[in-house]
Image (cartoon, helix red, strand yellow):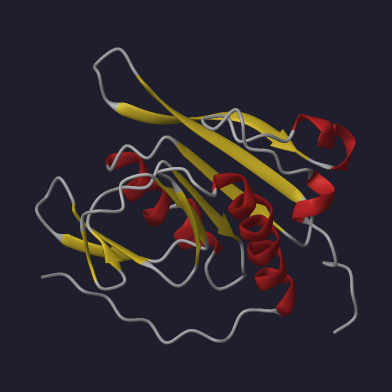
Length: 171
């Protein structure tokens, strides 16, 4: 088993605010459906193609496959994950974690930079060899904020202003 435990410093309040904003906006829209939105309190455990077992905790996820779980650990993949960047996690979120999400074939991956107020939306597709690959669908900033949408959940709505609400507050 390849379990990696990392002692991390607490996240900045702005980091947590983006996560709470996302979950609050989406939760209400998913009531009475088979899908659920989760904040960074659930784990996903999968086997990589090399046979290693990996456990990750996304900042937010939308999961429609919630039956396969043990306690707070899901054994199946969500359809959507979001990571909010921190200086200590940016390389991991853009590298190893993104690669694991791609390998597990998670449909959509958002990388949110709360300091720059920017959202990178990646969608999964397959190259000529049938390998899953993430493609940058759009980078959303203040200039094109009306284009923010969850690509694989067309009926869910969150605005740029909702996502970044209260991020500029002095804590």
